[in-house]
Image (cartoon, rainbow, N blue to C red; front, side, top):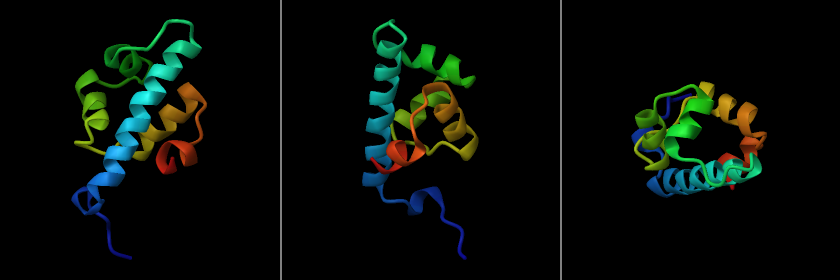
Length: 85
């Protein structure tokens, strides 16, 4: 099976994921009773650098499975919903 490179994934899929990620960050902050979380606050919950997290929201990069697993653990959101919409 050929390896899929990041630039092979259609940009609309990455952009849709990035928008869902932004919504997840805002919703999770409200769930915590803090209002929408900043990228910095959310990236700290995930244990990653703010710039790295920001690249996911800008659809510049796709998060590796390790980060997807952290998103699931921290927020409780199903990966099916996060990835597939």
